[in-house]
Structure formats: C-alpha cells, structure tokens
Length: 159
Image (tube, rainbow, N blue to C red; front, side, top):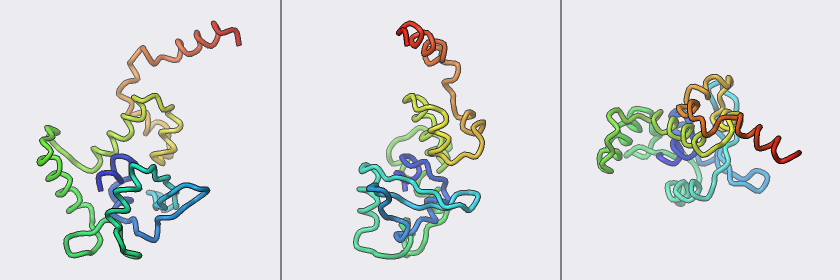
C-alpha cells in the first residue's frame, strides 16, 4: 500500500482499484495499468524498489485485487486510511493527520525537490492542468533553483 501511494504517487482509489491482472510488461518495463480520475487507462512503470513489495503482496495469486483486506477482499479507502495511520503511529511518525493523500503529496514534493521538472511531475501524477502540480511546489521561492541561474550558465558556456 505504501509503495503504491508514496513511490508511484497513485491516488487512493487507483491503488485500491488495482488488480493483479493490471500488472504486466510494456516495452521492456514492468508496469501497472491504472484507471485515473477521468476513467482513462494510464500505464505506470514499476521501478524494482516498487515491484518487489508488490510481488510479495501478490505472492502466488494470479487474480484478485493487489490490496486485500483481512478477509481477502478488495481494500477500500477507509481501511487503507486506518492501516496507514496505524503504520505511521507504529513507526513513530509525528505527522498529525496522516492520510493516503499525504503520501501522494510527499511523492510530488520529493520529485520537485529532487529537481524533476514540473512537466515530468505533471505527467507522473496524471494532473490535467500544470497549475495543480504547481500547488505542491513549496520550494518555488527557493532562489537556488531559479531559472535565471540556468540561463546564465547556458549563456556563459558559449552555446
């Protein structure tokens, strides 16, 4: 659950709606097919750090949801939220209001802090409007990342 939300940036309904049949390979990459807010199918690549825990969760099963409740049925957002709060509490997290969207928010801000350009983050999050992605950019007032420095370095290089 955590890797789907925090390392893939899935929305809670995308993670809970994912099935084992949605896992596959595409152009040599492990991938997960998810249905986004608009109902369109999106292909999300699975880096090894994400694929391994998914494979452990799936185990030998060949069908059914990836995320299961204690009865083996599909998890929905409510038990997922409760489980996430329990995990955060057990880990000693001091986040006052842990929620599944907190992990998606962390996914976006971490990508932006790592220097991934806004357009690529928008594509990864499947935001239709770049302004939605920009709302997550808490570092936009960080002058170290200001485009003027990139332009100046480009001009100074003589290219």
